[in-house]
Length: 455
Image 1 (tube, one colour):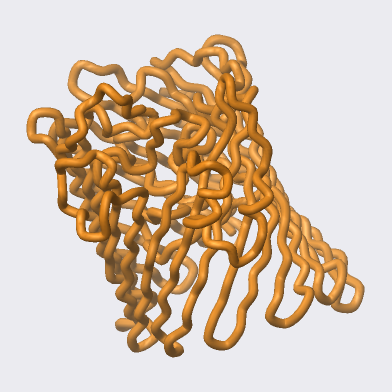
Image 2 (cartoon, rainbow, N blue to C red):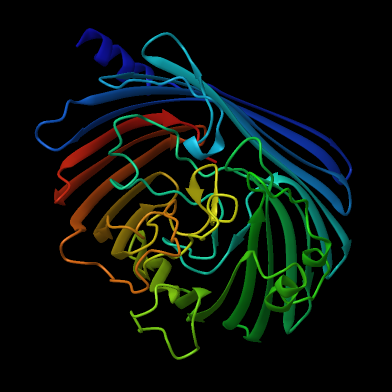
């Protein structure tokens, strides 16, 4: 108990320092921080408590080295100590999650970073490169095409006997953005990792149309491919050529890669209210076969939602988000395995619900200036555990050719209730707590107390 009280006391006193060097328009800004958190978890009545303390030290570095050349970087070092859990030695295979090093029998340490450079070559043309996230899609909670660094805690990811780090990982990338008044186009080439001895690549491009000031639609294509045991691959030049549809380009290399496309829209009303939707098509037999369960290759997902941002009512700002997500069986998977599936470091590049799942999500946020914020969330989740419900599943030629969405015999259904509070008495100090309760075929809770600097 004394150790726990001392830890909670430490959680309320983070360290912070910042430095700025400027010369006219050019500047370099460095911010340092120290953060500490305590998490307590328990799943199912027969499981043990899991108590984890995480200490994080890190920095933010950004600047403008020329009127049109900027950089942005982030790095942190984490130390975890947890009771009631076995930390296995990480063998640096990416599919096991982000790598770490052991600290004795009950601790580990791991570093994390990202960095990018942007060159605004013209007012409407930008070239970018670095090690960072690429995000496509308007969804707030479950982005289906490319979720970037979005990560929301869920019982789906946290019931393993071993604690692999499932945090989304940045990718090395090069790309450009072209933005005109009515139309925009962006294209990126990225390197992925699932097995450390094999190459893997992702290409993505997006065409956007600004129909009006508050309504836009987008069309996106992605393609994933990589090496297998007996199939060496290097980056395909045709996927790097701008404006070439992957739907046609994949035939040039033998029609053996994992191509997908998506369409989305965003309609913003009264500057505060947004309606959005996203349709992700991994594969279809025909354009009319969305609800045809006789062919397993009809793989698609959709996410629709509404959001209210910073609505001023009295002294408080109110935020609200409701989102419905449906992901069919086998979405994000590929019959050639990990070299072609839609994953990076063991994480889905799209929604982390994975194939054959459904979620109703609702969140309400209330804030007072920048000092105090409350968040309440409710999720109703259904996740099928049968074959075709994991991103790692591989459909073979002898497997059944039909599919079953949320089979009642193999689907887990549960609800997650979340509450969070964040208190910032000073601009450099943040103290917060989060509580999750899980009911249904998962039962348990997760409590987190933390402090530090949130930028």
